[in-house]
Length: 122
Length: 207
Image (cartoon, rainbow over all chains, first blue to last red; front, side, top):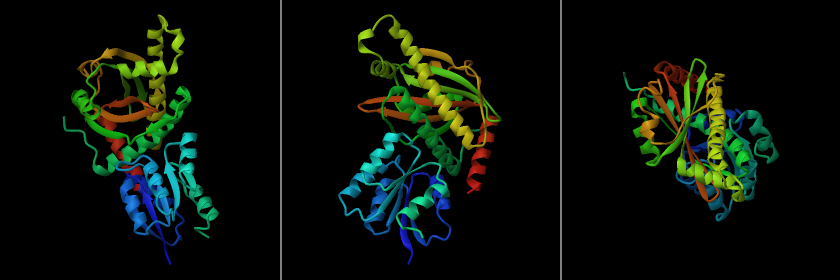
C-alpha cells in the first residue's frame, strides 16, 4: 500500500525539486500544499504519514503548522525543508516536534538517510 | 519600450531562488548582529526604473526617508544592486548593536558603517546566491553610498541610475521585537532581464 505524504511549499519550483529528490521507487501517494493551512487540512484528512514542510509560507508558516500539530495527535513524521539555515531555526523546529531538518536546495542524498533512519523507505 | 515581464512560472522560480538567497543572507546577518532573524516570503516584481519608486512604495509602504547603498555586478546578467533601508530603522538597528554608553560624535559615522555592513551582507549573499543558482558567477565593483535621508523618488530620479529595468526583491528581516526591513533592488538593462528569463527557463526545464 502506498504511503500518503504531503509536500508543503508555496513555491512550485520548490515542490518540483523536492518531488525529484525522493527515491524514484518509493511507493507514495503525494499530495501538495501551497501554504500551511492546506498542509494542516491534508494532515487532518489522513494524507500525511510524512510531511515535508517549508517554513516561510503565506497563510500559516511552517512554525505555525508545527505548533498546530502539537495540539493534534501528531501522527506524522514532519521533515522541515527550509532555506533558513540559521542553527537556531533547526533547534526551534526540532523543539516543535520535527524529526529532521533539510537545508534547501534539497538533494536525494539529503533525503534518503532520513527516510531510512525512520524506516519510511527500505 | 515594452513592459518587462516574467511569466508566472519564472516569477515563482525567481521567488524561490530569492528565498534561498535570503536564507544565506539571514545567516550572515544573524552572525553580524548576534540575533535570530525571522524570515518572511520574499516578494519579487519587475518594473521599469521610472516606476520603481512608486512600485516600491506600494510594496513596502515606505513614505519616510531612506539610506541607499549601490554596488555594481557583472556577468552576462549585469547591473547594479541597491540596498534600501528606512532611515529610522537604521537608527533602531544601530541602537541595538552599539554600546548604549558610548553615544558620541561617532554615532553618525557608525550608522553609515552599519548601512554599509548590512548592504554588503545583502548584496554579497543575495545577488551572488541568486546568480549562482542561475549558473552565473558575478564580479562586484566597490560599493558606494547613494545617499542618506533620501526620498524614494530621489533614489530613482532619472539620470542617476542608468538602467531600464528594476527587479524589486523585498527582503524582510525581523529581529526579535524590532522589525528591521531592508529592500534589495537589482537594476538591470533589458538585455540582462532577457538573459535572466532564459536562465530561469533553463532552471525550470532541468526539473
